[in-house]
Image (cartoon, rainbow, N blue to C red; front, side):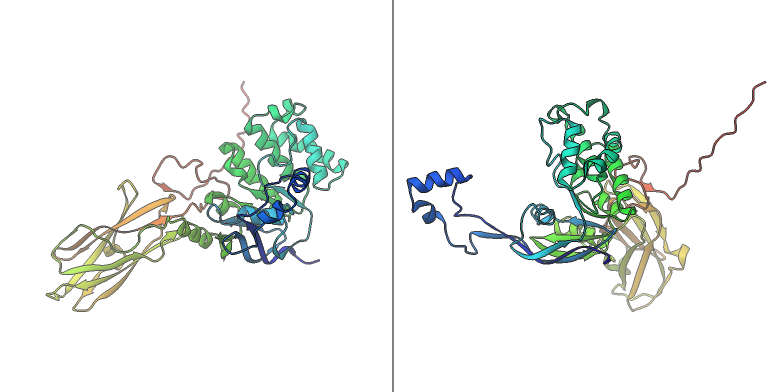
Length: 418
């Protein structure tokens, strides 16, 4: 058996923007046709580039069994349209999407739920829609109800449920019924942090069991925690397909959140014997646990003095609080200067910086302070956390950096009191 769970080839979906007859039912269309036989046809305009819109165009990718694929992109990029095509809710205009296994979809919270029916009845209804037998649903029923935490209200109509209860039950049904392919769209945008972590844990279990997940979210922390690779969509086309960290960087760049990284107008001081030129990060965005690399060039002043100098680099957070200061004398970074320029590579290995924007200041020192550059460049730390089970906002309210830590928990031996 092939290990391909889903194959998409040259997929496209086109919509008409204007010229559609206003009838919404067969009865209305027939009545309108009887009253004015030619009017309906007169309103229908031929398709042109001006009155059509390609929500998807030229989409090609494969998903392996057991893989967790993230779909990311700006609003309107085509993510939800792609999921609707994959879920067989809408037909593609061109191309194909072949799925090799039973599919379960959670495209909108509570999609397919009937408000007048009870939670119990909706569980069986959704299971039947997914092609599952009654015995199979009964086997999973208690687990679904326990996960959703709606035991007391399982026989009440879901129209009386709160939004949180509705969300929990909808996700529980989709995640526990045994489909080979699970499609999830923005479910983690709803619910509290405890529920979100339960969802992440459950989807990790689903992926670990060999089932395939297609996951859409604007929460990059959830994408980085769950997905082994990502596809980034832009204006209906594939903009990127590959590793999670690089894909998230592309997403931030597309939404215009790439920080300014080149040398800019700054306050300078010093004798000018040497100047730092073209100070920039190796790339505009880093994950929390990878080294942050700053590149620069040191050039002599007009006097071209010779001597020795060293560099201080200070990393500060968005509020201007210094996080750390690194002195090149400590790490063989003394420059024996002359009339030529020098390329300098600074690598910050630790500490692990929390997600956010950071600013680089530096000084070049010798017998006197030769150059001072405040906030000469910046870089962003992405919410790709070094912890296996964590949400980006969970437990990181205090402190300025992340830590490599461990807890060891053991049972305390019972003591006999005489």
